Image (cartoon, rainbow, N blue to C red; front, side, top):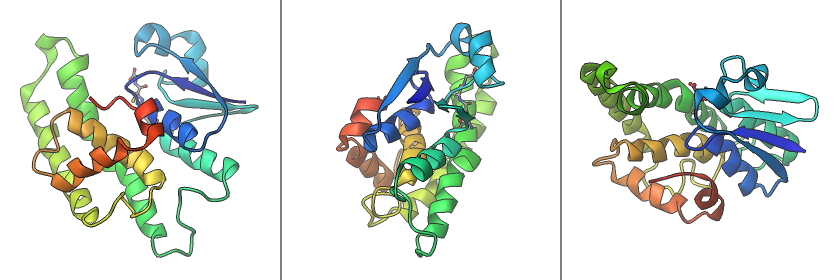
Length: 202
Ligand SMILES: N[C@@H](CCC(=O)N[C@@H](CS)C(=O)NCC(=O)O)C(=O)O
């Protein structure tokens, strides 16, 4: 049985969403997004930094949302949600899949820290402004790439689970202003029952 160690409003939503898209059976260990749960001795045994998501599958315990998505697709599907390696879309799949944690999430992390997590007297408007500008820059190529497409690669894929999730969170920080393609895309994601069930989007 797959067990997803989860906290709401986190990247663990990506794995929850994927498991629902694939209709796989799983258990959810629902923790609070709080040090009491995430930094507990028990959870630090699963993730050395006390973070989510973590997936357990029998003897396997794995962290990093992208790695977990790849693991589930490789072990539990016949290559679903990912173009074949000889498909012309495969390089683009890899690019956007990794662009998510590499380029889009770092400024989102900073925005969340300086708007929600730090006590008010330690929030820095200069750092926040830089992160907001960086996020807008990082999203612009995605706004162009999705032009004329239903999902990020055309058909729904694991890129929508990774980068699509980040785009939905970007919208919540007010960073999609003027990006009409991405705004329309977030509306299309809401037409997917698995997304609606698993991702906080407003
Ligand atoms: N690159 C990692 C990031 C994991 C991560 O930072 N998760 C956040 C939630 S989205 C977390 O657990 N934060 C708790 C904390 O920093 O204490 C991944 O994609 O899984």
